[in-house]
Length: 103
Image 1 (cartoon, one colour):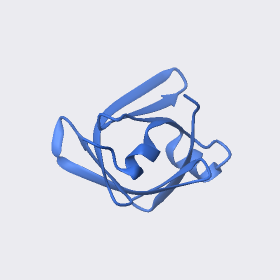
Image 2 (image 1 turned 135 degrees about the vertical axis):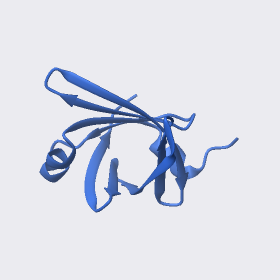
Image 3 (image 1 turned 30 degrees about the vertical axis):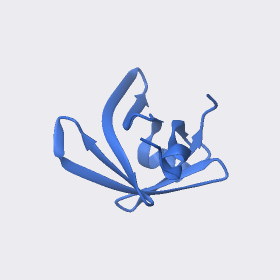
């Protein structure tokens, strides 16, 4: 199965843009890993704690639709776009900005 252009653009690791105070305040220290297999690994780092959430994702137009494997009936939708190496997300009105990490 061929990957869509939007999905190809998302693949890889993205970290919260620490220069964006609003993103940092809203989400904290977050790392996103979008895999070509449709798995999104969402990692929160907080002092000595690392929380990892594994999600299944799909891309439809400008939306990332995620489900948790243990709660497949519950879907979340996040608007996104990528510009100049930044990933911009809008989840329920909360906007955040991530930068791509080199592979």
